[in-house]
Image (tube, rainbow, N blue to C red):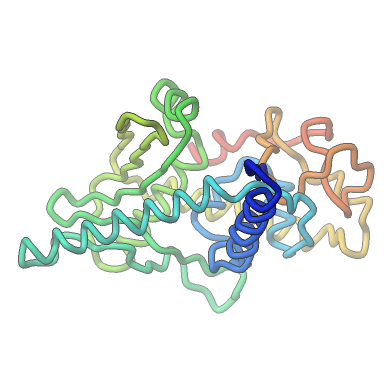
Length: 266
């Protein structure tokens, strides 16, 4: 957090407001969520997912929440506007922030559900909003959504299909946090296989971490790989310089010995 003021009173007030924002986010439903959601299943890092499966204590707790808070506000805004559009159309073209079940299971940790941003019955497409920085917006425009967002899109497609909807396409809408409106849309035909392969991979990771039992055998954390180029910055279990993986992961310096996620979900 960076908090500044033009005098002592203003400086103190800035710090209090900043801390209020941090505390409010820490107690939000989004932050308190413990179960793995559709947005996490496609995470390329097997070790990060393993920590999540075991509900391991987080170490990277100083992450700045403002981007996520702004994103939540944007989702609320879009939901409100599409609800109003539905009402104006006098029908039910749009499903807005609908809770969908991607996979039900008698095993609690195998269940997967989430809130889908928007389903459009006219074009038979599920849309997901992503409010991103300008550099990320340009990257997604040039390189596509990446594996994690692509998997999430198809998982929500499966959730809509399970809810009885016909899904022809999945869509990710990237909107830049910028003084000028910049919208990039990525879409492709819905493919149930992408979702099922991602769920199968998650099951393999869950079974593997249970088999290794790193809670009782902390040295076995090193057997759980990370990708060749992990995106560690926002990982809840990042602990730079850590030599004890049961405490936290040092990130890109760790040994990697895993098959690529792209190969697993192709």
